[in-house]
Length: 405
Length: 228
Image (cartoon, rainbow over all chains, first blue to last red; front, side, top):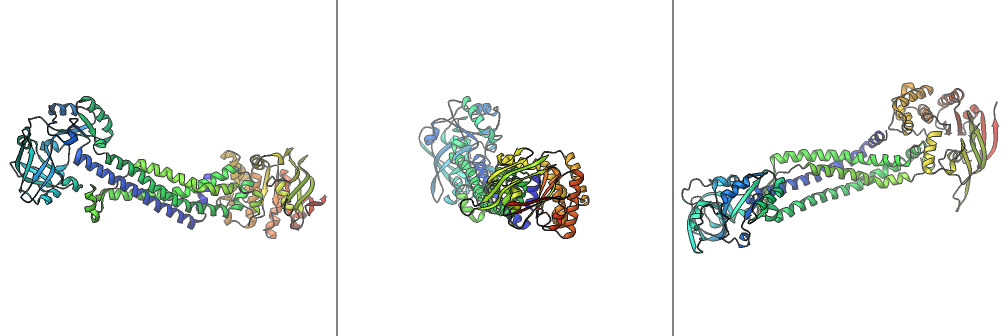
């Protein structure tokens, strides 16, 4: 019956309770939605990093990444790909020739990373083919097609079918050049990536540089789910101890930090909101206790012990917080679902966001673990807010309280 | 058989600064089945006396024995438990729980005692019938008149099957008809079920019904009269 009394007590002063409940609901909605917004934001960036830029896992010769030296080639790459495909959790894998070099147009030249790919196989490991905004993915140009980023195209001042010259070191250490034509222009959510990465066919760059068939610098692996990351990394590294096996967390440590930091950051926002709400609830609960001194005295007089009185006040505060919390969380959940479908258009700040690798349209993402943690935090807020008022109730003397007007 | 024994009871407020002797050496005893009124002018110490006897307040000196238990020796927690099991309270301002119905108000104390739902329902029905309120079971206090609320308060006080009822000016807020009605119910309960009632009052109608009248003045018993 204490539960029932506490719940009914919440509605004794409907206006006051409603104000507190609405405040909690608004605060929790803001907290939940901003948490899910950030979750979606980071997940999107992480998704882009994995699906567009680097895949889940990469294999190189151990010294290759020190200065992207041309000579550190992986041999028997097809056999290795076949072995990797058998590992649990591996969805697909691909091979790449990676050369840091120069590209020049009639206007200007710049340093780029030239990525030589098997165009069909690459579709299984990256989604660059889905990011084409002009032209086609290696179609329309028969000889030496190249796919470049929008930013690089602007920098070189080239368009579709325009010629660019790639200058690289060949297998003998000599400088060699090849003319390529722009078959497609891609645009990812990371303009820095678009300005620095250029895709050519592996056969074309191998011919230009003299790399033998089956020799590549990089093997990239996509997993069925991120949960296989550590397990697959370990298995692959055991399978090929002569190669350096790195997953996205080590390849792009800033993403790992950002993921963790945002987790902490979103909880901090919720904690700050709850802390502010806590003072409102304390105030309300103090009023509740002061208004009911006589009633509390009577309850103690007829035999309700202090622990139960304490529990009743705490429960009332929890109900107050939970009611507002549930409303706020539900609204936050559905607003997240809605924007998760249609996206939140931040294109007003799109240029700035894309410069740091973030998309201009954000799709907030519901995370049930966060929902559970926030719900527990709401209950704790209710308890903490009621501690002082409940302590005041405990200190009441039944005889004095009953005499109160 | 005495159910209450009070020996040299003192209650002093503001002991160090400006001492007020609200109860100043009272010796009394009450037998089972009494219908006693403690009368006296305002400030004479009636309510303080009832509070100390009921274990709501601590005595400065002296002892209160209820069924052989020295109430003053009990801890706060034990006192609460003791009150729940042994004493029924009726207050001047009814003090029903406003968010509960009449039935729930009566059931509440039985629930604190851990009684089963079946037992609670049965006892509530009986009590509501005995205070002639069986048709108001599911009505909240704000929909009841003062007299009706006080009758529910009497039923609540009886719910835990206490040894006796302490009623502090139970008729002070009631009109004459409600007072008459309430007193008749309490008298009937006293006579038919041998329930002990101790009132503090300055209502002449209560004094008229009481079989024992104890007059208190300045915290002392001035007279203790039994009626035939």
